[in-house]
Image (tube, rainbow, N blue to C red):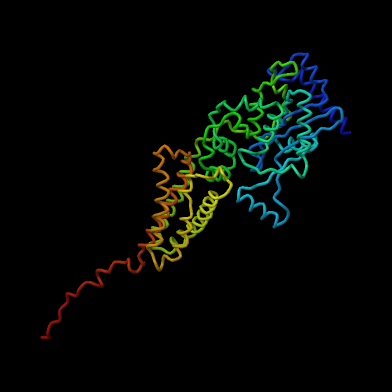
Length: 442
């Protein structure tokens, strides 16, 4: 059954050489015949983005079809586990917080794997790679050796060592570094952050968190080699690579390609530019509400209650986020180091949270802490005039700085509140000096 499915599946692929393959990847008749006589075939499978947060950046795998033995395996490096039970999940979370996530490579039968991705609404692109028989056999042996419990695990990095870079490196090693030679020096005009924003824009919480959590290391311009951390970009850039055939002629690495499933999730071509105004409007709305409730709380209890209903959860969230941002500087999350957003959200919010509880006894302490929070945030804006601070974090500043200012002004208003009775003016009729006189009776 497996052999029959493989034969039918690959017969379709071979028919594409003459009918559906793009002219850019069509080969001369002799080369095509030589390839079809080779029982080994190497294909790069690229799956587009999906619905879940970890699917936004796509996925890929290397498929090796051996018509002689009937084997058809997809090797992918994107396997991870949240662990079993509470202890397993806590272990996963601890490794994540340290920046030491262990991923693994595993192989699966190609047919069910491709069907599962297509059924999930993921696009599926197949590209056959042109290699000599010796290169294909060497790649097959390397992947089979890695597909063991002793060799399958590796330390994951979002940008430098993921499912796509591992597939890229395996292909590059097989063709004697031809992929790196073709792509390393070609600039793209994009950055890691640019792609993060582009691919997560439909998940606002993920977009905001990644934009906040990642620092300067992701803001340099990428080469096509570096940009291949994205499976979709790897598939695109491999079209430019040329490799020698058995006769020594340079031919395209991608012999042919076919889109097997269109996919329900479309990628943005560029990051959204209008998000800044939404972040600014949100920051101004919440900051303005805090100030207005602080003024209202000068006279009315309902104003003070409403102020704290907003302020306490907000400060708690900012304190937690600031603590995580500080923690990240001391972990293996290299992409989170040297993050200017630390000036916007940092442990000073945690200090302010504790200071508020002591505000009745030391009213000026909370105000001074709030002023420090505002000063750090404003400093993060002012230093933008210097050439060393060019992290593109205008959206985070637009959201957070108005919050801090509104918190400070609201606290200042509450600190100067007047009791309602003390605020009332004396009644002119009842408190005016008496002008009546008593006269002696006649």
